[in-house]
Image (cartoon, rainbow, N blue to C red):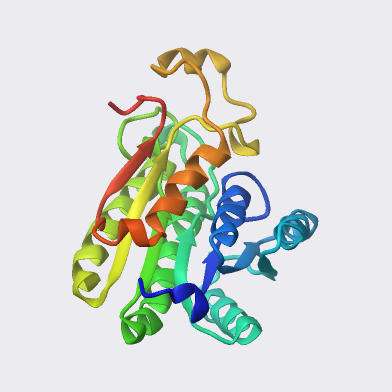
Length: 246
């Protein structure tokens, strides 16, 4: 991209803690003004913004449940108004889980995960692509999961959403590649976050690296994919999982 940091800003959804917070900090470190989206954790989002600003960066906290179809337009309008420029980096990180075995998985649990983890990413991507195409510059990174690449019993809804996110990534990437826009996915494995805090540690024995990853390790990969150095990388899925999906 042609120094788009001067003419654009970035949006990271679900960025009040964990992987999203680490991504927001990493992108801000590259000079982007960053929108730190959150659904309910305002103290967490404010803390991320404060840390970014303490490090010399620019950030603003933006409330909104991305599962609400009306929220993408509101988020983009607020961010564009705050920084006075279009969103040229989008990281679809917001996600939830509602685990159960398929025979007993409820419609409510299915719909909640699909709406937040997949449909929201589609709507945000659709909204982001319009100004990106006008600018002939843009980076979109979708945070998928190792579960989108290999089975994990009890997570049919989560796996379907994350696999769908990979399909969305690949298809949309080829549609806009000639416009200077890249769209990629990152598929984390077991990462030390609140979402994985209750996971049986015996499962780590399945990870060839024999340890959980950190949010910062995922953020480093996202930082690369949003950088100029990744201008010829699009439609790719980068696993950050200690070899779990190998």
